[in-house]
Length: 254
Image 1 (spheres, helix red, strand yellow):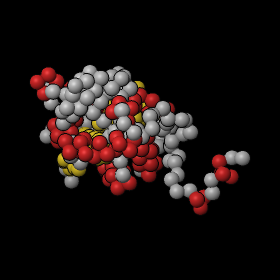
Image 2 (image 1 turned 45 degrees about the horizontal axis):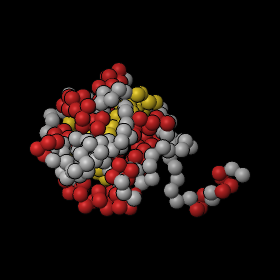
Image 3 (image 1 turned 60 degrees about the vertical axis):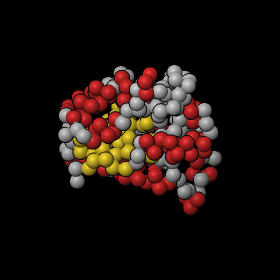
Image 4 (image 1 turned 30 degrees about the vertical axis):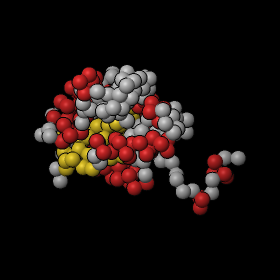
């Protein structure tokens, strides 16, 4: 019995995008990555860019993104995805080029590449998954870890005198001359997912229109790193993350 015999077209409510294959995802239950992957696949299909999209997935939880969406992919060293994206877009300006990065990759070791690529106005989109912790490597403190938040490397909570303050990389990006669209979204509710999809689509369209660089931050959960159930992680994110990392558009040249 094949899939078509089991799933009746009339009962299909949440169909998987064609670009997403049948490989089992490695993400933890409740992780935001899978939702964002689906949105990206849907948008690429809807834009008719399946054969002309190049994604860059560097290091961290996003490293295996190439295993789930059937487009052209390029791996990058830790933090170097914006530099790689710059090279690819300059070589093939007719391609839709985006990087997909976590907070440790983008806002820590990759800060220089991120800031300078955005400031140069490269016609790329950077998708930034911010869950305020290093997820894959053991739950260490990230540049985006909130004040008082406990991690493996700040077990008593983040303190400004010792660790500095959480880095609002998206606010910094909004001040740069080269950025066309800078936004912060989330994917914990249906309404939020719709807004996030619209934001990613807008960023991709800007990239193809040559309007400059685009940054889409997705405030996310990390149930494993936070040591919470998916439900509690969503609630904690809404009560804490979204108060510091306020959702909405920060810059739109249009």
